[in-house]
Structure formats: structure tokens, C-alpha cells
Image (cartoon, rainbow, N blue to C red; front, side, top):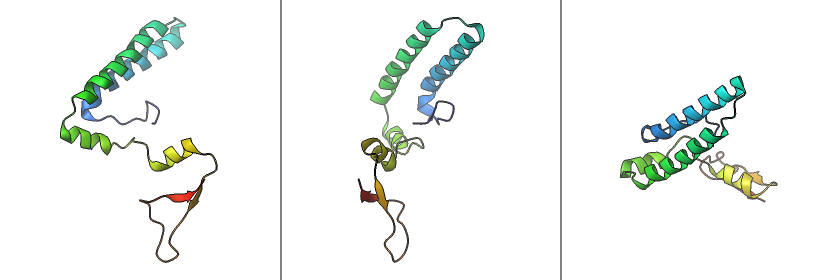
Length: 107
């Protein structure tokens, strides 16, 4: 998942985005004023987890489709990178070209 600054949010994820923005403001304020804001930040992070669970429990069918097509969703190579460190990808079929929809190789 990208850093929060680069993350894309869907319309039903707006409450989560607002909480993340609030955390960023608190972190910026804490840096600027050298005041400990870890308590409020931790509460907001807990609120994010609660809100995320609440949102995902009540998704409509279309929202589930949107979530499955989310631009920031992990792709196969991300999973492979987490599972192994020495993956060697095989490319192409020697006839046409490389199929971007399929990944194969040796670990």
C-alpha cells in the first residue's frame, strides 16, 4: 500500500481519509512545537481501524466491486516479493509477446 500522501481513496472511504489527514496535521504540529501528541494520534489510529471495519461490513455490491478494482490494491508481484527473495520471472512465449496478466517463474 502506498504512503498516505500518495494513496487514492474511494468515495465511501472519505471518513478514513479525514482521520488520516487529521493524524498528519497532529504529526506536523508535534514536529513544529515539540509537543508529545502520541496519545491523540494513537486514538485516531484506533478510530481508523474501527471506521475501516464499520465501512467494510456495510458495503453495497457496487462498493465491493470498486474495492476489488482499487488502484492501490496489491498485485501478484507484491505477494511474490513478500514470499520469496529470489524469484526469477519467466517472460513471453517466444511467439508473440509477454502476457501482462500472467506471472510465472521460479523461486
